[in-house]
Length: 115
Image (cartoon, rainbow, N blue to C red):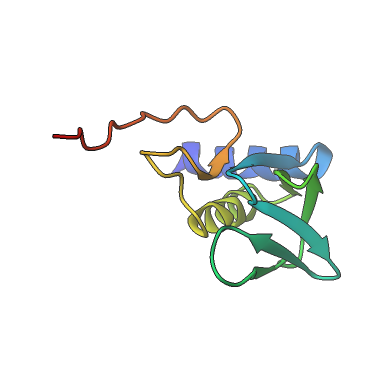
C-alpha cells in the first residue's frame, strides 16, 4: 500500500497548493448553462431546465454560456462532479451534441443510408 498512500498524500498536497480543475464544453444549438446562487441551471434540449446543485468545496464557473470549469482541492470530488455534469447529457455519437470534456475526441457514427 506504499504507492497508494504516497499518491494520496501527493494529491492532497497538490490540491491544497495549486488545486485541481476539469473543463467541459457544451455543444449544441440552444444548449447553455448559467450559474445562479448555489446551483447551475442547464438548458440541454429537454422540455425543462435542469438544475444542478453545487457541492461544498467545489467552484463552478461558466464562460460564454458553453464552457464550464470545475475546480476544487479534492481530486476525486472534482472528477466526480465533472462526471455527474457530463452525465446530464452525454455526447451523441451521431450529431456530436451534448456535454464533453475539453479536448475529448469522439468517434462520429454514420446514420442510416437512404434507400
